[in-house]
Image (cartoon, rainbow, N blue to C red; front, top):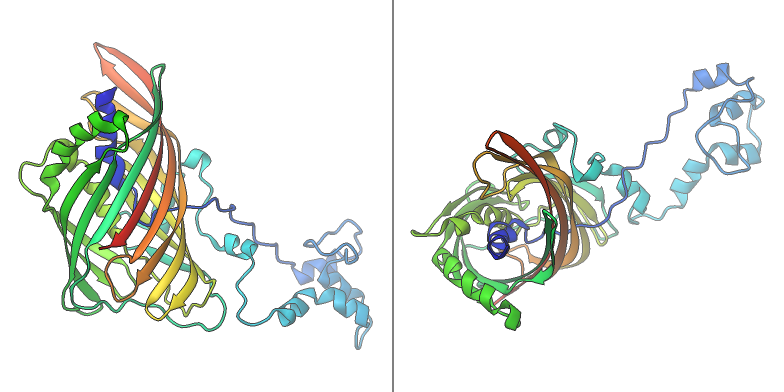
Length: 409
């Protein structure tokens, strides 16, 4: 069991994106049915005909009221009944953000039973390996202005990132109570090159990795982790980012003699790097603006759709203060976790991942100025093992809570 404990954080700790935080969002609200005026007139004599919901004192559909009204100017009270939407529009002050219900109705993400999307649903939203897709949900209040990155060439201040993991596991009748892992602290250097077209080339280096025991119970785990993480110092990364913060073409240069367990976390690190830049909408935005970003990532062998919702809390010059909410849905139920033995296969039975936090971004810088967030995930896997002509099935459940904090040195 101790070996499993060490393998999980190494393989999956960095699979959580730096800005991967998620909220409990309401499911998409159904769009109101449109009234066919011609059909409404034909059906008008029928007392059972119904229209879309209205206040209690207005029970007839708009088309029917028009059909019964005498020629000429309608009565004032009838007019009020037939034009509630227009009056509401006129009364709404300019620059107000949209109601929460309207925001929820615009989300393009379908329902996912047990956190697993229907086959092919994720590909219709964003292709695996494709750039993130941004949807503006609410423009926010005045004043509004376009938001874009304008990175400055040169080396920026080092980014110090800390991660704390708490994990619980149950498998084959064995239950592991919530266990806190040692705090891991990583220090990155980033350098921005000359802009080419709409993209900046970014070079990054992992300068230092530290494992900090936070109690006597973590000492042995910390001692076991340090030698496995030490070889990844000097890890190099290169990627490109455009004016709207969309990261693409991430490549890693691995130091020699990196243990297999440490290599398994590199995919997660790639996803973390991609999430350091918050993609921005094309439209002008103001205080309270809200936008949705759809992206694909791979974590512990699972293909995930990540839905990030950003809310602009404050804007001061180049600094953007954002509330961030993210949920992850499985794009499919098949999964290939690292370290699976020969003859074994796994599928997701249930998956849930969500969290929330804040981030402060400088649009002239390649990494966040500061922030923190917490992500909680629950996953149930059905593992099937074929051996000796027999097939055995076993369910394994893993619950994790990851807290990430970051600051510039």
